[in-house]
Amino acid sequence: MASLYFTYSAMNAGKSTSLLQVAHNYEERQQHVLLMTPALDDRAGKGRIASRLGIGRDAVSFTHRTDLAAVVRARYMQQAIDCVLIDEAQFLSEEQVWQLSSLADTDNIPVMCYGIRTDAFGNAFPGSAVLLAIADKLVEMKTICHCGRKATMSLRVDEQGNAIRMGQQIAIGGNDRYVSCCRKHWKEAMGLR
Image: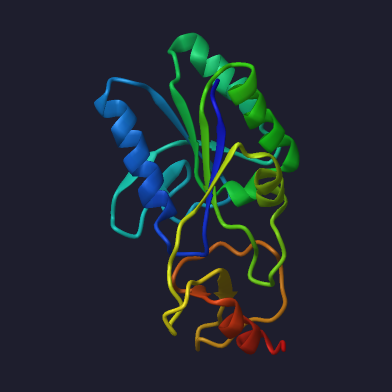
């Protein structure tokens, strides 16, 4: 039976790089993968997954309204799919996570999701919360804070590097907008005890 995986971390731990490596590994064995990414994350271009290392691949883009199971099943009719890889999984809706679980449970297609757990204000993203609750396998990728501790939080910063303490849950950005840090230093930057 196939599984639903959630690989999570703070920003800048190498999740997209890992996803692209997994795709390469499947394809080296003449297996077919379907890469998917949210349309709202267009940093590398719409429908493209890219890592900070400079590697990237085209992917199927989706919105929060897309029925992911229907998309995968339609593509499966054209060509067998051995694995579905989802980048920026925090942007999945709760319903989409359940759709992906159906692909693993009913269609026997492994689904590997990569994303962050919490937003810049310490709140769980809806997609991540459901993945943490129902994924068969959870994998934490690690990155480090400036102090050397494990970074578990993503701090949103302005152009001067100052913490942004309130705002929208979703603000697309990379190293220019986010800094990975441990909870202690995130709390200090956010003015929390």
